[in-house]
Image 1 (cartoon, rainbow, N blue to C red):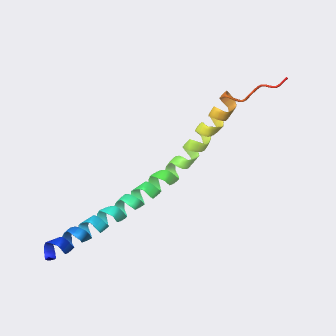
Image 2: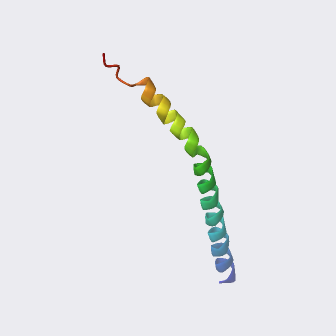
Image 3: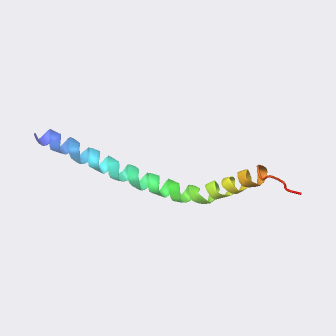
Length: 49
């Protein structure tokens, strides 16, 4: 039973660190994704005369 509890704690700690890592990475990539989206919109914008 104690090793099961220890394994559960390790999994919870790993999940916490992964959530923090993904939150930091997603915040860092937001400006990049906005600029890429803007470039795609400009590239495929229909030119109306």
